Image (cartoon, rainbow, N blue to C red; front, side, top):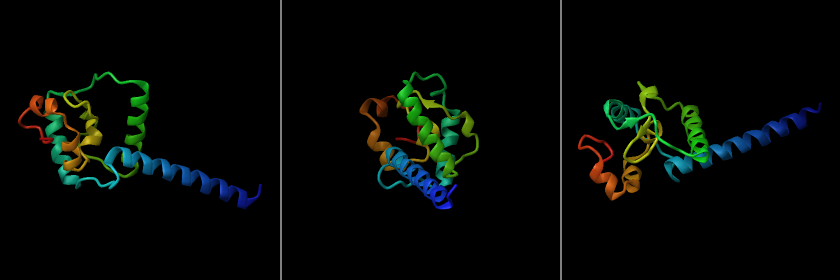
Length: 128
């Protein structure tokens, strides 16, 4: 097999993977692609882990599940992890996947909250 062909194929695969990763990051974090500091993410996770509204049984469609899977894969490839992460599920109020939400910049989190979510969320919620 020709080495140039193998290299070209690998380059094309890498380019597709990078483009997909960039798209997923943009969907998750917005155009800036910035995450919060790991200390902030850990503080947020500590609140969510103890919260009774951190639920594991949240109905989602297959398409949403596939999108979440892609976002989690990119998050993991970025090395974004917090202690107790496996106990982070879904927020009962906003429906967000907490493993992803804890890394989002505060202004982005607030901009996606509805008035109902703002009034229903407990006082100790870091999203407010």
